[in-house]
Image 1 (tube, rainbow, N blue to C red):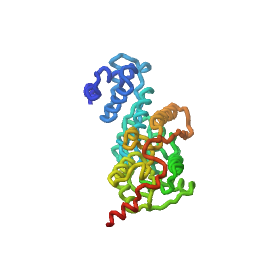
Image 2: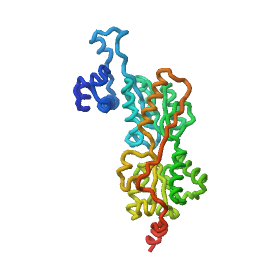
Image 3: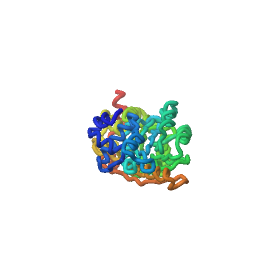
Image 4: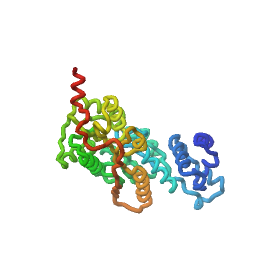
Length: 355
């Protein structure tokens, strides 16, 4: 990859790419353009030859510009890919913040990538100055990451026990807030669609029902991947087995997209027949039909704060692990309403199907 090829893909001049890479002028391009250039560099593995540049300019060693520092992002959840809109927004905000301090994202890895020999070789040859772990991780990921860098920040919805810096929203409290809101609307039989195995949102759902004296039944839950496809299949499963739910908690907005689609296919009205609440508040949530009621997670602030904590760690500003909690709120839109006693019931749907 050459500067010319990077410039062509980014839609800017070669001189603009050069200035961004060499940090000669922070106003050479907007933050979004700079982020686009660094994303191309990360994806292609381009490595600026700073030594040659300094020799060309006749700069002595003590006056040479320091190289931009690099970050590796690890998408730790097994079923989360890099296109996940929740984590994509966090990374976008992180990258824009990083540019201000001459950092760029050199690598993006999934949890599967991290254990591969070629990944370790790549990080050994071109080590990152810090690692940001996105989403819940396990002991294997913690060990691998610890061996790669001493500068690690985790961000997500699940406070972890491992000794990394953390920037989080508390997933259990988020779920409790969502269930409490549904109860305030008169809903008492509330389902859950999302992952269940070692999933704090599911355990938080059960705990919230218990604390609020609401009934729990496994038949009112669907254990599916937290994707739109998973949500669609999960809703169809519940329609065949569940009690007469009046509300559903979706583990995230991607799941809710599939749930709303399935309910439409089943001729259930949202929210008149059933209320749907979710977690994340990705951009598309406010444009769905109906507009999705969801717990707003401050993804931009998670990304910005994760980088600031990482920067402080790299520069020696702190040694003990930090745990930072960010606030959240319910974005109340159109997919929830007070309990409707005249709503359509799943039991009626099954009776009609049996005749």
